[in-house]
Structures are given as C-alpha cells and as structure tokens.
Length: 123
Image (tube, rainbow, N blue to C red; front, side):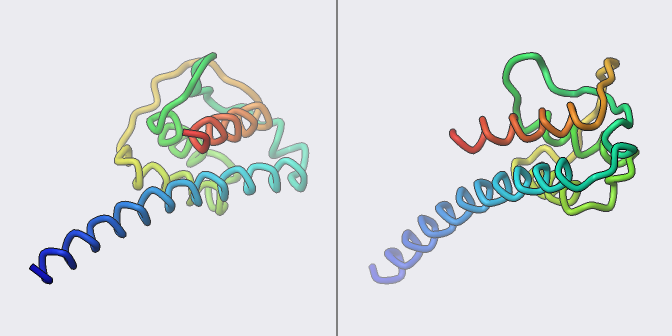
C-alpha cells in the first residue's frame, strides 16, 4: 500500500512539474522577444521572414513552425530560437512543416510570437 501511494504521489508531482515547465518556457520566450526588440539592430528587425501565424489564435504547432522559420535568420543561434524548439519539443510538435507563403518583417514576426505565447500562457 505504501509503495502504491508513493507511485501516485510521484505521478502527481511529475504532472505538475511538466505543466509548470511549459509556463516557464513561455515566459522566457516572451522575455527573449522583448529583449531582442529592444536591443536588435534595424537590420535584424527589417529582415523578411515567412509568416506562420494565423490572423486569429495560435497553437503549439505555430510555435514549432516559428522555430523552423528562425533557422534561416540571423537569430538562429539565439536563446529565443532554442527556447522555441524546447517548447515545441515539450508540446510534442518537434517535427513540423512550414507551408505559409506570406512574409512579414522580423519585428512583426517577433510580436506575433510574443502574442501567441501570451495566449498560451493564460490557458
């Protein structure tokens, strides 16, 4: 009986920690975006990137696609890029395809990442 209770408590603790890890990653992504927007040169922010976010709403799949898009930018080795991939892995969307054709400037793309993470953080 004692072993069973330990197993149950372990499962409950791990489930709670996993949920908290996702929230922490989202907060760190938001902070990274704010930092890049405040410190990056206009060259980085004026670069055109594929827009993967729909006009309304977003999902973990869109965050994964954002990470894939960033692989072809000057921010490909940034902590933001790493955290986007970490969140995609956490959410189970590590392998995703980018099929969008519309492009936006990097600063608009970063704002959309931030807005998406804010909506996911609330849930």
